[in-house]
Length: 316
Image (cartoon, rainbow, N blue to C red; front, side, top):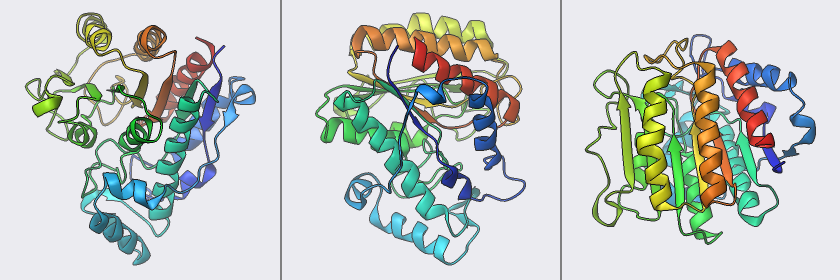
């Protein structure tokens, strides 16, 4: 059994997005309820989040954006940059905690203290750009973890695998010219779904040409479509890149019952994708996987899928 770390903190619920917002504190309540039905938490290492170091944050996000976000929260504004990115006075501090806890999980995986981790964080991160918020996201948690793994921890090849139904524009742009980070995204087709990026011809630039792989799916895509993509596109790309660690941007909104998606995946496909990922991690990355929560807005689906996701991370 792999030694599993869990980042799960009630303070993440203090990011109050309002009663009608889909990215709500109730998502963490659902995850807590799902995990309570397993015995994984009693065996996992709890990761206590601390705010991310400002210098590390400024290396990924522009200082003026960070300050604008902080000031907006202090002024009790209800959004930052776009209406979807709802905030409250506590949101800035909670976003610092989410990023800091994710980075700490990455450090502990690199050190060998744990082999894998699941970070149940809010706000999510993969839409966050260098200088602006997008799509519920404030700071790019997965990108910051990749920065630490390469910079502080000395790893040379990091894979970010993103299966949220919405393309992770922020993560793609963070590493678009960087050959040391491969970004693979499976998502709803950008002609039909937010944020309108992630076409197949977006494959990297300069030295990073070929280390971005976008696999968009038309509305109604099924388990069989994703299965074929993993077998024929994802696995060969990962085998060629040979990552030393895998970061998962784990969204569960490609599920057929999600209110914000347009695909038709079942609970079983999320488990199957993780199974493939864990096998690839065993082959190339000494089993090291850092899973970071992104989307997923049907609370029953989130509870069941995350519980199985965490169980597999612990027991595979």
